[in-house]
Length: 129
Length: 399
Image (cartoon, each protein chain N blue to C red):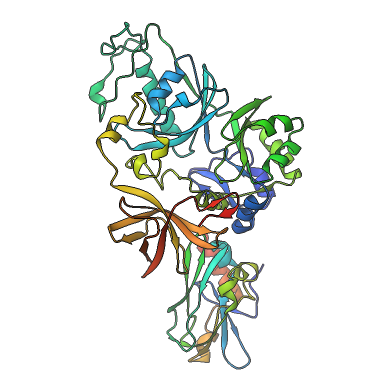
């Protein structure tokens, strides 16, 4: 599975999709879900919570380990994916479809500065060494 | 850079899509796609495990039984019929656990022992050292004037704690040989369908496999079939020549047995309440504080290495099961807060069969089944309940 080119990425393995209304949808990448293994719990941020860029805001817990998920940019949480409460394995099966939370960014420009697919892949490759 | 050790099934794992990891210096499959699916597969149907990293040790010689009575905490005199197996710890003189193992009585001249991968070299060195001290020609009734048959003196000064004197053996040396069977591979087949799929894969084995009782072993040609396992399900652990392993693995696959990785092996054994060496116990832990009192025979007059230390020191801690009531996963080394003081999780994970997090924990001895405890998980205190284990038997939750 390659990194979809219409998404942005962070070095901490989140993907970001910009929606038509200016909000962003956030999830974790194929690389992240593969490293973590089968998911058993997902803890999403509360709707309305204000986040700083790179703030810990969610947790994905696999049998192997718990991993923090970080806000890609500063903003406010507008939604969390309730499906993941009962079906955390969706993240493994469909990492780019199983979104975790949505945000309204403080500055649209912050999103443009995130990594594109090629830059993210280069980052993943460098982490492997 | 050291290269990882490989089992004869390495190519087969890769061909089956395994995610390979460094497992204590071995290149092993952690899963073949989904550790959770593999776990369920074993509880519902049948799965196969590459356990070639474990070590088979053959002890031969007329003195083997006497030596094992002295070496092991459990009593091999429980083994009177050929093929019968016994789960035991091997203890240090101070009472700590060197390893847990299974010993099979095949003939009075041959006992087979299976030990853990990570401790195998240590175990064999210990066994050989103890056997050398045990192999002595005794004038009848004079155990103290022992000399080894090779002319050396027993160097008691080198010991940390006094070893018990081996019982007088009467006249004549009964030499024991201890051989690491590096020529053997081992495959486990586990699950309610394990028996029927095993004999599909091994033509001619049905009658033999059907009549084999749990915790017994039998030889069939070059295969050694034991009805033992590490999952809590019916199943077999099969030892066979390394060269035969890939063909056997494929035959099992053709019979519909799915490959199962080490990730699922751990969740299966934890649900079954089975100890893992290096986690639930080690050389600093008494078996009495690791839930293994049932494997230690303190009743008979038999003396064995570690007996005096266990008798002298009552256990102040015990191993209990925990079930997490909140969302999250219990993990090794997390601190457990009880009304009687702090304890520690020794093995924690997620139970796919129960869909909850479970753990084994070492806590103060007075803690009771049903008690509520707090576990420090990351930055929170989560509530867990103390339960009796095993957590799952015959595919069904017990808690």
